[in-house]
Image (cartoon, rainbow, N blue to C red; front, side, top):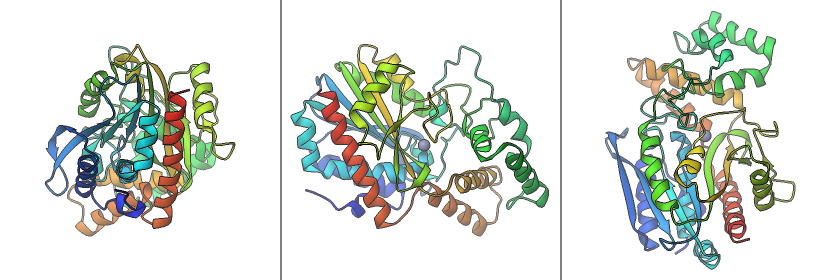
Length: 366
Ligand SMILES: [Zn+2]
């Protein structure tokens, strides 16, 4: 029942969904599909598909999720499909008394349409704010908002000069942070966190509540791409600023120095400090459980290229009249920014994910 690494990955959302549903069926698992209101790029049905491997009343639960950031699902789906076919892994989880909850395509619209954001143009991993309160202000984004998305693509000389001047004055890290920190003021901009819960946000909460209710311990591995060296999976602590939980995550997942668990709370991560993160929902929906989570953030291309591809794709989204060849080129650039379509990269992705999965069930059972 094992599949090869390469066969676990797909060239489209539709193919990925089919492989996931087939892998779950082959493993004898029921599927719970939450159908999205819109259609995919090829007119296909979009859904958050949920498969649970393990007893409904397990007191230990591991969540494995893909495509929080749409297009990053090309990576995450491959990991999930491989895991469902991996009998040794499934036996290991069962031996530790851990139920595994696979959340396939948290943001299926972005996955299919090669966008990082949802159909609401929202970054799902900045959307878990308390919308009854004042939303955080990103001052640095305000400074760049009026030229971050240029009027033309490729950007005109004046626009390129503005980018170069900003980076010369503040540095690449500040440029990355200004854009990626998230913002709630520019609905047509990048890393927009929204002003209300998105479809994916609203759909995820009851799933967490239903499946997490019996659990006393919950772990979550959320699969991402687009930061760090190509093929390297950075394990970024994903939970509250709680020293005991950070220490627990490091005990479970620190890979002997070569794969440290980094944190946005102490500056050790390549990620900027962020708010509105998706993991915060687990504390609301499963308050009874001890929670330990990481994001696996796999490197693809240099971060400056990732940011340029996002600027281009946002411009395209605002200019549906764009020339078809240019549109294809921009979408291909976008996919390459979040998915390295080589056998070697996929092998690295699966090997590191598999290690983190085994570590998670051992940790939950420790
Ligand atoms: Zn991501």
